[in-house]
Image (tube, rainbow, N blue to C red; front, side, top):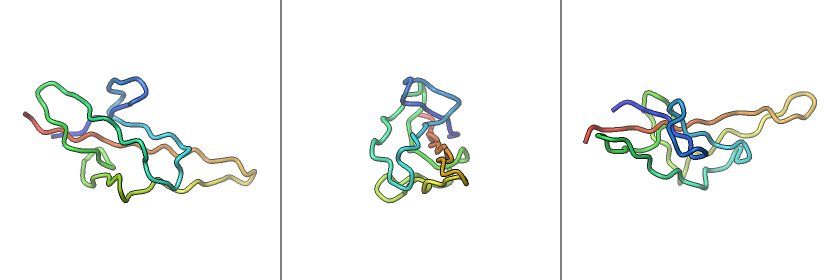
Length: 88
């Protein structure tokens, strides 16, 4: 298949990733991304890496916990999900 990222914010492919806002640090992704459409392919799930080795389990998997620097500022951690595709 091969992965391609997806951004729900703009509703269009965005460097092949689905970006998760940092406010959900340590929690689950509550808003499941809608299934993207790609001509000639079937969507085959959201994965944790571009190689599509580990599927993201929305019922179980949690985002990285929040981390803070010495001044107490939140260190931004971006989480990306990768769409897996199979030829239709």
